Length: 486
Picture 1: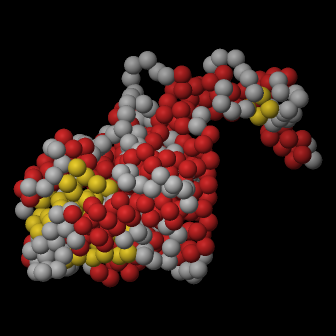
Picture 2: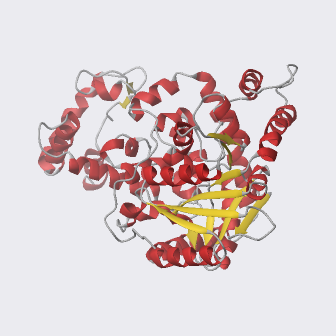
Picture 3: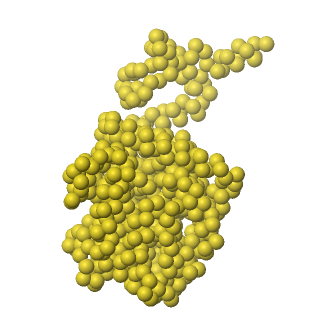
């Protein structure tokens, strides 16, 4: 076995979408009122469903603690669990491949498909294959990849990009989906309406032909069970079941962090995941396969274990908790920043709070310097996370790394302001003088009790927010009057 855990690994190669920083991309997204309406409606609906099914469980917090503990214990012995997974998969007729980065993974998958002689594959929705840009790599090799998840199909037919971990087409409404189907789906009924049932029927007819003729399928995996070599995919539509059972060859790309030691661990995760992701008590389809079974299902199975920056992340005793993520998307649905900007603004296949943490760790903080700042640090993401990843603390940690790595040279306006504030606040006398001086600001904002415009350099602050009008008296003055004057 060629293992890379515990060894220096190449910087993760990710499939980033553009060179715009988050602030630039977010500004464009905020100008799209239809996008904000689509996102607001969808995230509110998912939040409501999740809250309902979570409230049914009196031991929800205990389940979260158990999930967090299981993930931490697994990461501490990840190399052992992966080696056992490899042994068990191979013992049951599967073949295991190790990919250090996106390029290696794409080369492995492309060569496996070419070896079958096929030029088409069907795909189960997979964040790992999006991360490495597999569809584009296959296209360059003359291989067409057909997405079979309904939302992924909408994105693919529309020439679009996913904007959500769970619901890739969350930024589209039904009218927009209808237009995409009429324009891009061969043989679709021209009288197609935007009724969800009619849209689903059109997608089903379109995909059924591809399921029946496909000889090769590509999937991700929600979990890989080390003790038996079993892989699992959970989904809501049944398209995954079709991909995992009908083709002759199945290729699974799995991030190394998806392994769990035993079947018993799934008792926790299969309660946490559906409630946190789709707001369901259980996933409608939970498909599990173990190697190759003669005469039943795919007769060739390949498992590609993907590092792509995960080893480097694992070496950070604090930052490694980002690898605990089970890709439920709960943090996106409660994030006030994501709800207004959508996923495309993050410039990565992992949007939202977890993307703002995970992407910089996988592909480098400097390459994604604006993402750790794409948060209000309100803490809603931690409260929603089923495995209790402390995303706000990780964001602050990444901000610190970014600042530390850029020390030296000409200081920024922010650095000068913070240095000045530190100097003032380190002396009671200077702080008291600053309080007295601030009262001059009471001449501003007399009508609304808010200051909406200040001269440079403070204009940078008031350009996007109001400043409170200074109070009539400071706390120290109030204390002296009320307490010490007695």
